[in-house]
Image (tube, rainbow, N blue to C red; front, side):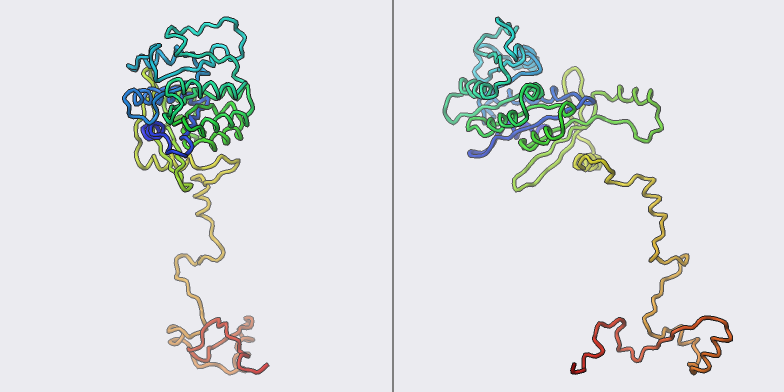
Length: 374
């Protein structure tokens, strides 16, 4: 499934279409969006160097980590980055985001042509121009395209409003030379409307869901804390693809984070369907499904129109004489005999109706006065 995301970013969009965009969502319980970003960064870099990607360059915008962190990570993955590398540029928004340092030192020895310092992250127009200029420095001004990776938009939202950040990402997607774009977001730090706005811009959304303890309420707090610590770094990785004609495809995998990075593995088909279904259920303040106890209580309720004669078959009288009635029924009584019998028995009155003919349909909708000229 992560390979599907990588292929979408590697292949980019068709000419005249907006570039594919990915939002990687994390939470405090599962803060591993950086590991997913590094996974995509390494694979995308390898495909660019091998000439298998539609983009011929990569612009990395760093907010949450220094440029040296990512360069060292790529080096560990066997991807050597030097000052002569023409396929990558790093826009440093981490070292001095507000321009407070007079003579900043990035701690990067690869040279000034590789890493460019951005000292005013609140000026999004300037940031957009810096990203495009860095990309054109690699691929030129023609139709050659490049990819853009933003390690985190949390810092952007800290210094700028949501409409401005949304406008920046939309402008990057709509630029003719941008092949693909991805960023990460911590949903616990922002309001739901911010998350929804970024999801609307994206063509793909990936979120990390941790393994939660059983919600039966029987475990004490210490056991829950132990289970949370034991399962930390494990969970499910859900991805939602927006396809053409409004279709949506949801896929799920299990993830495990260790010292080497994030590892993804498929889950069983039944668990995949359940996980995908849960991820599609909107977050509301009431239950959309019944619990097991509620389901059992519901099955015990006997509805008033149900047959309650302990297993006996239901018989609905339609005005005809049944076979059983024909065997046991005696000669019809006269009105006087019937009245005397009712008085002697002490029971209330009854209305006894015999159909004139079997051709008469029960509960007929025909008007009995239909033949009259009224």
